[in-house]
Image (cartoon, rainbow, N blue to C red; front, side, top):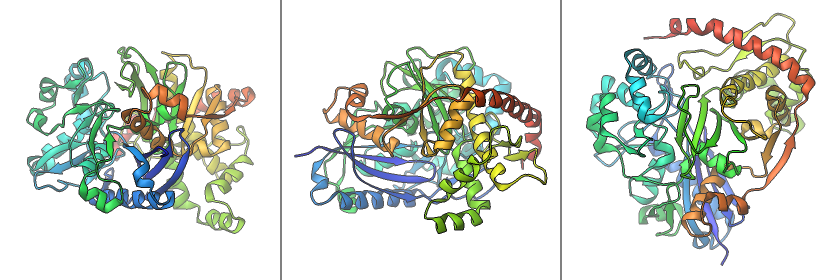
Length: 506
């Protein structure tokens, strides 16, 4: 009987269930858009029951598309999901609050406070990372101050995909790649640490942290209730899975130190692997990778392709209608418009800060340099360029510590040849695309394959399940133009940095 593997990917905007065979070929898949709840400015939440039902729905649909007997062929299941954020499960056996998504900025003041009073420096000795407003450690302090009754009712502190795995199996575990980016985990000793939690005033929540597991460990099996709701076979093994940025890296065969991994989705993720963490303060985060001998060295912010999606939804209704008339999607059509504008044809600077900037969650998106002669095509191109420039702010820091042979690119931007070329031209590096549509789902399916014994580890799984596709070389003439525009982008961003606090509602 053929071996199937199921990957569940819960991202910033979508949930996807994809069934793969043992060679990484997609058999069937389904997706659903997730509803975002924004109760106040800088707050982004998700109904946890809605999220679980969306997962059940896409599993049912994927199984139906795969045909009769598909559930019996599935050897293993794994989940990936957006990192950071917070999903709390209550003592009353239901969600303790809405899930908090990784774009949430409500807890901005805590990292700022910890930086000033020395807490951040003390914590770094164990966490190996800069504290972000979107991390559980910050959001838990917001709950402690504003809604302590929620924490009193909390049984488990989950990350997104660990919550979904809990609903699949009924068993609570904390998978290391995800929790190592939470601010709650001691990366030096690879454990939860009561002294670390005490630094943040969260010592009493140690009881709510589930047992730690590796990405490829078996973490329970599909329970009876889930089997009935989804059509999965009861008892199907479920592995730890991964933080989605790990899943994408594994699915791009970033399993050694040669390539730089860039993910342009809701978040701008820029990362590479290293056998030692970077501890000189020049990068944002170190976390534990799915291959445990490596650290994932990361620079990130919620400043990527999600800004383009928002801009399109808010302002490009006319372009949507024209795209539909021409039989293409709106992003293909807007790419065509933007391609008519050369790199030197406009100097509009777009700061993609809808969900905060690289270093201040209070920052706001804006256009600088607009005047009456600018066209829609020029503005669309400025949005695309602004996202790449913001990635470049992160990439510059990573290049201090590694010299990649190429960038492996994933996320929404990888679907746009124009955008891929921009990444090559701005960075001056070749860009490679992987021949698979659903990277996050494939990456976690690969951990399921390892847990099921099909492959020895994620590196071995990548040899059998990953195919590298197109390679785009940089246009060095455009690179020279973009170096000047990037310098202007940095000047604008730096000039506005002191003002973001004035926009805060607190």
